Length: 433
Image (cartoon, rainbow, N blue to C red; front, top):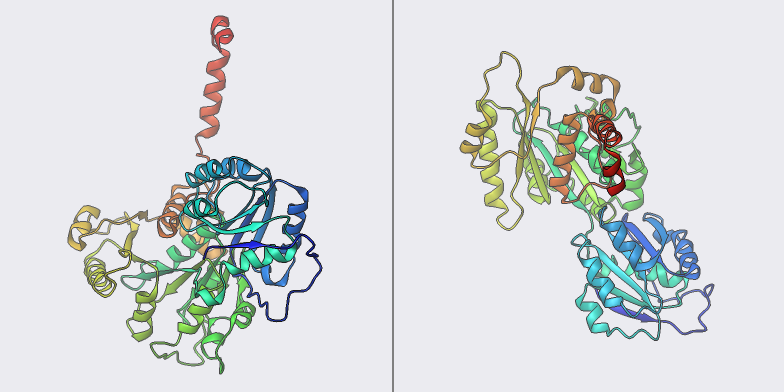
């Protein structure tokens, strides 16, 4: 959606909108504003307190377009960038620079001035989704952000990632939970994990949470669950990660129709950037539908014959059923188990006609400690290469880059060697430096 706003100069910030001026709430997205004037920054901060932006994660920075380009040269862009160009003659040049560091799919709102010389057509060509003529009011900011995701446009902002095991007991849930943790912590994407193994799910144990309500309350609700209802069922794990837990009780059977979870997925998709489905290893109408309806699929397999056969069958079925979607991916887990004959990764890949995106080594001590403590691998040892593997899977599944540099355990040693080398340098060399 691309459009321009122009408000009258005498418009008051406290004036209520007309009765027919409905502004639908914005979903759970990240918004970063780069302002040049304190007046605009104050309006954006006030907009962040509006109920319609209550789900957004809004931050305000000064410095305008120059600061934005500098920031995103080393960090991924959020869902929405709001830029103020205060009488700048280089708006188009600044947008060209921003395009070189901006992630695909990011929406851009430009706040300009009545005397801007840049043609609106050129702004549109450079990816500006909304152009607001300043000075802006609080309501201008709210309307601009919310309109980018208005229900009338039927824009689903959430990416659904389905994780399933090629065989029971391969550790698919452990992989799903650790990848979700990496998405939320390292990529700073608001995420929700849905534990769909209602009878035996382990997400609550892995995240050390024991919520009273969860996914069962939503799927068995007599009425269609809405956003507010789903929000009440979520258990907060971190600032960016929430859990829709399984009851893990046997007081009832969990037989569902193929479309049982559609409403839950659709509701969360409209409010959450990333939804991770922890799908149990069973083949039914609803598990098949959940896999086919996901944006990205990760199959977790062990390097043995049954897993290889099942992975091959699942990949073939999914590719045939989703010819216009991204190719499903798979990873190998528990690789290198002592005294167990294994199929080598090269032979596994040749048989299934696809390379694994990762191979996770067998490490019973680390995984056992994490499971018993209700922690993730990154919490046990943030610098361990298994934690790095989960981050790489998260980046591959989401298409996002890492938000902060990760230091190797060798970094302190390398830095000491560099300092030692400089200290031994000849005086002439020091002067030359």
